[in-house]
Amino acid sequence: MAITLGPAADERTAETFARPVRVSGPEGPWERVREAVERHGSVIVHARLAQWLPDDLEDPRLRPLLGPDHARFRKMTHPQVRARFVASRLLLKHVACAVIEAAPETVELAYKPGGRPYLRGLDQIDISLSHTEDLLLVGLTRRGWIGVDAEAKDRPMLGLGTENQVCTPYERRTLAQIAEERRNAALVRLWTLKEAYSKAIGQGMRFRFTEFGFSPQDRNVQVLRPDGAPGTGAEWAFHTCLIDRAYTVSVALFDAGFGDTDDTAAATMLDAGLIAALVDGTGEGDRGE
Amino acid sequence: MRTVEELIELANTHLGTALAATDAEAELTELAEWDSVHLLRLVALLEQELGRPVAVDAVLRARSLRDIWAVAVGT
Image 1 (cartoon, rainbow over the protein chains, first blue to last red):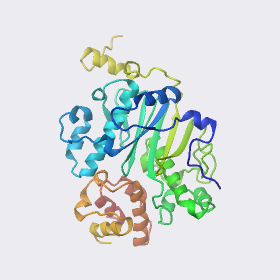
Image 2: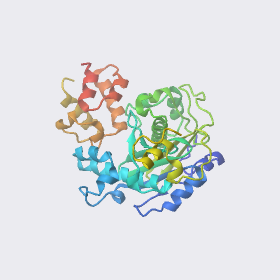
Image 3: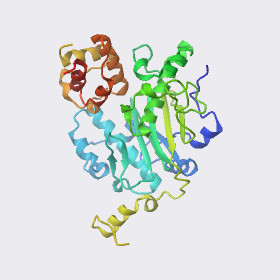
Image 4: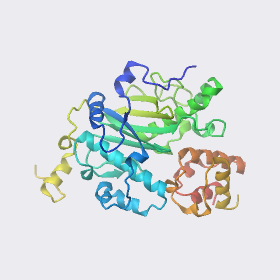
């Protein structure tokens, strides 16, 4: 049974997802990010933590850049956690602002109950964030909902008791048919797909991983019921690829039928209420019209 | 398993973490080497250690190692 962890294998998947874009710092390349969103409606961006880590974590300029997250950041004590928090938020904000063509200080990152991040006032853009080791990963779409997840491709997962917590009966059966030397990588792929899907639907791990699954094949991937029967339709698209030959990265994308919005500049992506509040300065907007 | 320190020792022994007893109360999101894979592996370890199922839903709602320990021992 073959498992493809390379580039997209079929035309539908290839059309849905652009190749992930490496963004090595605030200098971009942002044109490639914008092109991906323009052509595909979505973009996956990856970077290394060190590339987005400010020299001075006490720099006062971080306060407006992080916005409300700055208070949470100030309470963090572990240096590694603080570094990861700052670098991932800076990357995410820069990606979003490259797409909407706005300054990072003007966009506020907020969190839904359960921790799912979103951009306040930008209701036509959905975002997702993941990190593992020193890899940072951001997904952004204007099509609907997106979830991304990354894991070291050779992270030991097999035979440690996790299969029963992670896999459906169908997945356990199909995993057992995979050559032993490829089985752990296949489980890592399944894990990242489940994480990505859970993030996209805003459930995190509260939606038990044994209640839904995927096929070991990376062709026409869809959510499967525990017995292997189809669980979702064409509105969902999934893709898995390798980054730097070291990380398995999966993306889940729900097409909400928002259509192909070519114009992602801030003025058109901000919701009307927020624009009104910003314009009249009262926070109430003009409710008379 | 009588104490949260024993849970931490279990994690360090089997997951390769270097958690300290003082991490018991910390938010899981603020433990540098902790992630969701560790969480599910710990559930499997706890079930093996205790010889009975652990309420995974409750573990997933836990915010700290002490919360996980409390779920595991049923307090």
